[in-house]
Amino acid sequence: MVVNRSTNAVAPAFKKAISNLKVHEVSIEYVGVCQTSVPSPPLTPNTPPEKRNAIGQINATVGEILRFKIPEDTFFDSRDGITPFLKLSFLTMDNVHLPESSWIQFNPKTQELYGLPFDADVRRHEFQMAAQDNEGLSVSDVFVVVVHPRSQKKWAVEFSLHIDEDFKAFNHNISRKVLVAWKLARLFGDHDPRYITVSSISAGSVVYAWTNNTLPYEPCPTRTIRRLMSYLVNDNRTLTQRLVEEMKPEFHILKTDTMPLGLCLDQGLPTTSVVNTEAAPPAVDPDVTPSDDDIYITTIIPAVVIAVMLLLAAIVACFLYRKKRKGKMTMQDSSTFINKGIPIIFADELDDKPDPAKPPVIMKEERPPLPPPEYPRSVGSSRGSTPQTDRRRAAAPLRDTPYQQPTPPFVASRDSKHSRPKAAPTYRQPPPYVPP
Image (cartoon, rainbow, N blue to C red; front, side, top):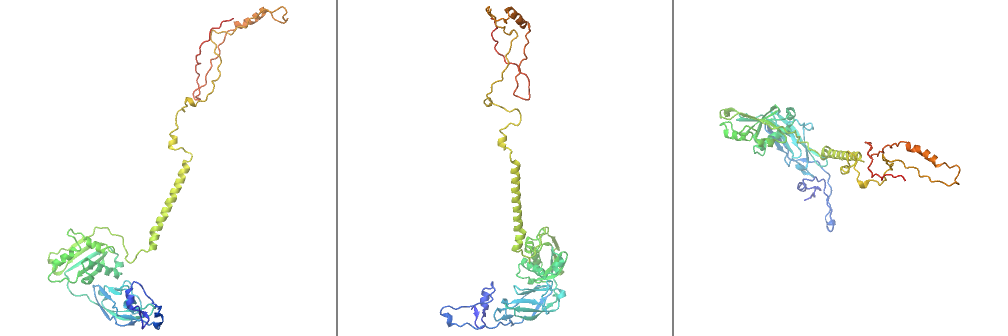
């Protein structure tokens, strides 16, 4: 059934079937032949939830974990149904939510009361539980929690854990106190901490002491105590890996102690005190879960910014390197040049230029040529002509002039660094001159 015909509200069975969804209203539309045959039920006004079975009185004992689930038939709403489909609030008699440091707390998701009372909480406590439907209408039920004193039973042994926690913060957080007891119950293979009685919680850092309330005092349960000790301490006096892993990640165990009491002191049970040598892990808050926005802000965005900065730096470095290397030869080009010494010029690379003209070379025994011979002229020669004898006399001084050898020529070297004269090339001597 989807809708309650009498109230036109969503049926509780339908809500329970799809409990992962929150249904506010269901509408039904008929088609075809059913459109006129079935009339729509009249709408009824919403009414507040009603209290059907009062919670009454809840009993608790000092040192024992309190766990109480609100019964399903405590409240009922005509539209929303039974208690699990209503919103519950745990309040004081002054309609105020209890602080986190209160010894008793309420989990609205599981609709359970939980707590850990101590000697200072022994009395009668009054609270109220308010139930609210989807439209905000509510009803409340007043109930009593009576905390009874600790049992006067004698204990055979006491165990304790030294937890790396701030004592003040731990002592004001009842949820963490109860969580330690639940973890110890799972360590010993129990489904809940009903067999654990917390003796005390003291400073240093946090010393959490407890005992097993099922152990008899007389006779001393030596074998059972040794078995319980094996869950905490190895034979080589180190903490068991099972204990360390069970307490992670919320708690880091520094040390564990085992103290036999009463008749068990004379039964050969050792008083052990084992220190954990592992480093403490970073503190983890179980109530704080990183959201997607936190992951983007702390991880993805910084990574993208760093990647962009590295890319820009690489581009700038490549640009500067290319600018610095512009105009320079590569290693392959520079290997084709000679850095030191005189350049090598091959014969086929020289320009075909004629050698510079050189003055003729005159040998030592060579004399200038004699003037051409004169021949007698006719009588009708000009008057101004000079006799032959006079010309010979005029030419005579040329023969008497001593011959001066010219300065030997120099050949300029191609190398501008070293200028030194070079010997004139040897030529074949001309045939001896014979005067005519």
